[in-house]
Image (cartoon, rainbow, N blue to C red; front, side, top):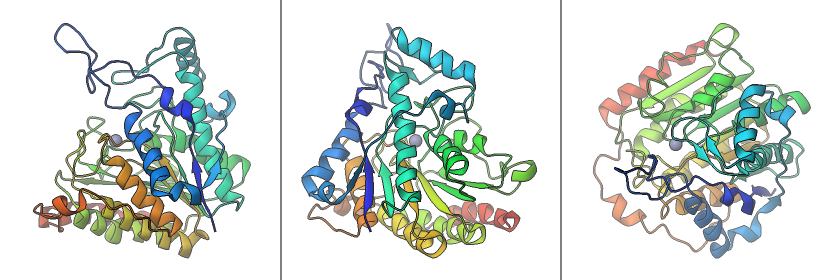
Length: 366
Ligand code: ZN
């Protein structure tokens, strides 16, 4: 069965201005390009076209999430604030997160694109789906946008799926190199959503994403953080899947698996210090597809988050979509050979210790 793909040109028009990486231009910072700009996403879409894989994807048309749908997660004052600023000349959701005129509507289309991907998978129109949306969402909390994120695309889509489609249990596996704090916060007190985040230890947001953040009340045990030391390669990530992610999914038995998909754990990302390759992302995708086949009729949705290497994000994304479709194109990963010679890509003892600390929390899942 088919793989769905969400994209819209307007995603590329969300304006993050002439910041230099993550700093606003000033008399001491030369104007430049914001880290979260369209290019890595546009080049991924372009590589899908050039590889021919785009012809095999089922286009899913995004729609605008309504304010009521967004308000299932976000507060009305926060939604009103973003809307008002966006109607003028833009502003900042908080530090790091500038936006321009019209970004409110584009963020509605980003959340709505993720919701459309959910709809297509849940209604059986496609087997799985990838939403190449922008702005990203996993850092946004109920009353504040942060980390380049305005609205929590995945959180909003999960609430939609449970409210409108009556879905029971949903599990997230966030492989973005930063902590998925917004998704965690959205469901921290609930056990009908299992949130799992693999991330570089205490990278962003500050003081966020510890193993001890394990859910509260009804949700105690249903938030799993896997903070990894910098320098982890495919070996550590696959070990984290084998020892924590897959056992957690098998215990939890979700009705759908969703990946907040960031490619900033790659070996050449400017905002992360990990060494995952396109092949690593391919293998993680394969493991999640096997789990989804086993547990929830293959239902797997990915929603794009971070990834700041303009050159490399497209190859990581292509590998994921090749795996989701089962179609291998003629495009090779140019980084595969040079990256393969880098040291310590196998699981290292200190990495195994960090993974085992997270695995100790598995017993709390019922
Ligand atoms: Zn990230």
